[in-house]
Length: 178
Figure 1 (tube, one colour):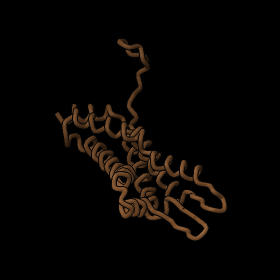
Figure 2 (figure 1 turned 45 degrees about the vertical axis):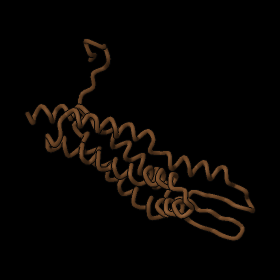
Figure 3 (figure 1 turned 30 degrees about the horizontal axis):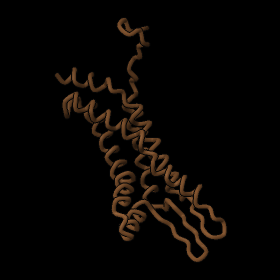
Figure 4 (figure 1 turned 180 degrees about the vertical axis):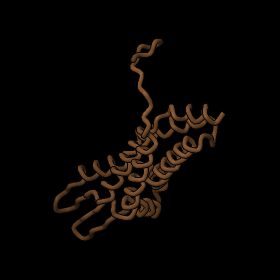
């Protein structure tokens, strides 16, 4: 079936959309835990070996007076993912409970979640680039830790959660609440 106005394909609503949202979101939240507990980077030099978690790396940057970079790492790795979890939970609950905020605010929140999703993998890319560039074999190496994989999985799962959310459910919830 095609739309009479734009001739695009008409897609019916997925009756299991919210179940998929919750499943992917919970998987993303579970993967976020080891992403913050285990090392993100493993650095080895001739004389030393160190492992850095996300928060540990931000704290180390503050100790070296790199406040701007520390803030970017903290916001990109902690604040934005947690904010995304909260926003998706809020959207799913607002659709299930029919109305928490008005329809336009929910659509704006959904747009923000989708926009943030594009930039969520920046931490993983930084670790991959550092690992590729700093391979001085006998002198120093930087390798990704298990947290890099966990963080990537968390980001992918929350992106899938946002993609599973059908924004038309916001309209449906607004109609049934009125």
